[in-house]
Image (cartoon, rainbow, N blue to C red; front, side, top):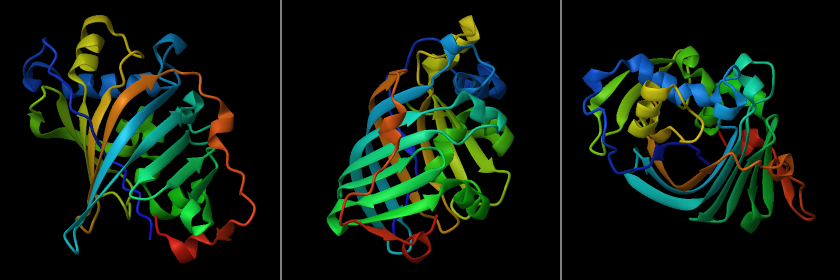
Amino acid sequence: MLKMLVTFSFLLLSIPGLTTASEIKISDVVAALETPFKAETRRSEQIYDFSANFFQESLIASIGRTQRGEGTVRFKFDAATAQGEAPAAKFFWEYRKPSVQEIISDGLTMWVYMPENRQVIESDLRQINVQQGENPVTFLSGLGNLSRDFSIHWGAPEKVESGDYRLLLKPLKASQLIQQIDVVVSEKSVNRWLKKHKTGDIFPLLSTLVTDANGNRTAIEFRDVRVNLQLKDGIFSFERPEGVELVDPAEQMSF
């Protein structure tokens, strides 16, 4: 069973500036996080795509087992998605470890391709969301809508050791896969928002910790993040190679 519990842990050096969370409002942190991904944000201040290396660590609570993985990820955001008028953002998670695997979506369909098994699982992304509620696989697609989709509170502690801000998100709609998400927002992006009301050049999401109802947790650390690369749509499509079996998702995986 493939589990994609997407979480992020990206530790940065503390940037001089605001020193305690109590000096700013939680609404300021949320604004710094959401604004680059909102449809109404000026194009020059949007983040419309990004690329990064990632390192993943997942804890399976029932057996106390930790699994690690790594690879590259590319994401392309559709600004109109914030208004619910367009498909979800496009993404491509390419795992090198613990095994070679690709998770690709064009915003409508998601493919989980396992070359070693000569199999691909094809799913309707919208149907997944309807059946499962908030989903770690598609969490990044909704960064512009966090205050709409989650109740948001200060985390504990409000600031992490690196000086960045911690928020606690709980889905407003029942989800089988997300009980809560601990999110760390870049102090640098918050300071830039407060001082200049500028966004778009700093990827604000540094860390999240997704916990499900069974206590499973997963962390992904992003490195070498680059934004606004003009990624082409063709990256986010999948053509089934000859000899690769198409597998029913209901028999193979649960999201």
